[in-house]
Length: 305
Image 1 (cartoon, rainbow, N blue to C red):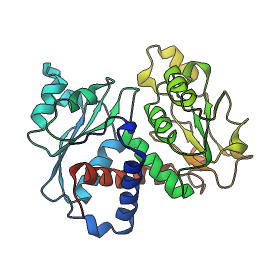
Image 2 (cartoon, helix red, strand yellow):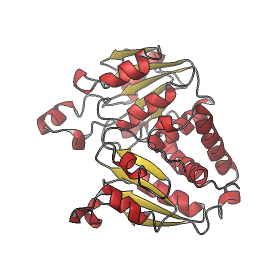
Image 3 (cartoon, helix red, strand yellow):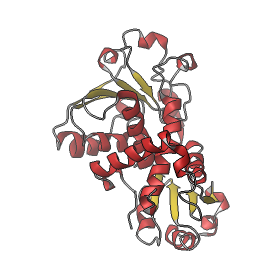
Image 4 (cartoon, rainbow, N blue to C red):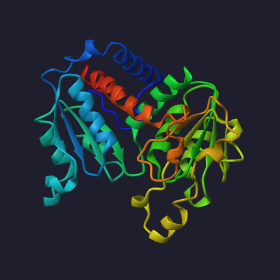
């Protein structure tokens, strides 16, 4: 039985297999509409979510399966003091696969150690978000045609942004990727990413504080919001929350082929004036999340169509 807790749990070959399956689902949707008939997905969301939870539910329903679970820790027995391990053991009696989001880093890993069914990490604190990474990879593949040889700018909250951490780990295994890290010094990417990913693997990266200075170089700009819920000090959040706002003026020197990505939710870091720009890929990215989660569910359940 395989779980997905960290993007590196999947080999490059396995990732490519999931992405190719997602592309086949997009092209041949009707072929998969009964693939998970009789199967149940449990969505255990101890932390609020819109896109991730609903895309998991939509994915399972479009595969012909059923969904059960909760969307808040307040509606679970966690409020009574039940441990994560006990919750997983019990829910595993009722479901064939579990998607779990938790504010504490490592909670899905703990759950996977006792789970009788596959566990998918749907986000754990500021640590990892592997299904968003698969979504991002599918989006890059569809937008650019390849997962090799491009320059990506990661902009905003690179310290607490679990989507950024997961994406860096995944892209570091492909060829010819140049990373430009755009953030204030207070929200720089954690040191362990620099040492364990970039330096250890001799990957091309640099850190800057403004997007304008690097915009002409970028093939992709990946925007992130400054996450209020990760801050201990509200004054720091208020001071940093509007550091980067992408608008038409910032794109004046950008490539016509640039792709603008964002894991969402957006606050104001991308102006709505860009929503109709053909380079704006973030809503296409959200749709790709459903397809890649369909492919992942099929893969972890061992369903062949």
